[in-house]
Length: 172
Image 1 (cartoon, helix red, strand yellow):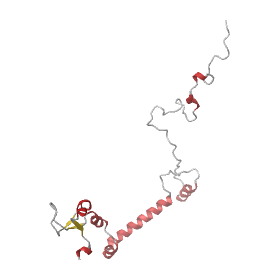
Image 2 (cartoon, rainbow, N blue to C red):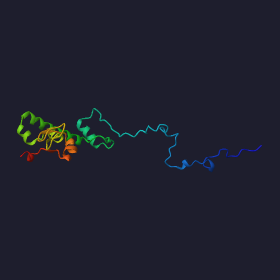
Image 3 (tube, rainbow, N blue to C red):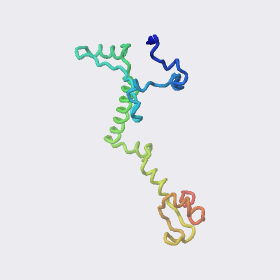
Image 4 (cartoon, rainbow, N blue to C red):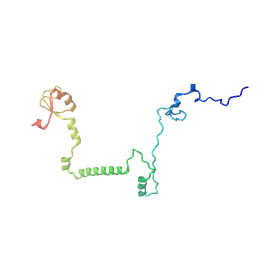
């Protein structure tokens, strides 16, 4: 009867025929340790930043001091700093209060002289007044004014030389 040798187990590293070339890849993840290897839609959870709320017993001054100088407090990237938020709120309040003041004081001279009504300006761009140079079937006759979409004028009437946009110089 022969004695079994001390080495009864054949190791994968020792046998070149059984060696897997993927085992040498340093970026290969062992599927037994990878929790989400079976579902490609799931990702590993990303670590969240630490955010601690101050205890309710602290005062407001202690709160602001803790928020500013606590080295363990890491705000999330999507949050703004408190000073930025304060400045934005102050700017918005100033704009809103000035508009409310203008509307309540009925300072129409300021609004008429310095304020451009954006909807009117946009309507002038989208629907300019057009004067026809010649008769166009299904639209208008020569010399008549019409509000027309700027795309129709630009793509059809102007290249054919059938119409022109009305300007103050043209009306004189």
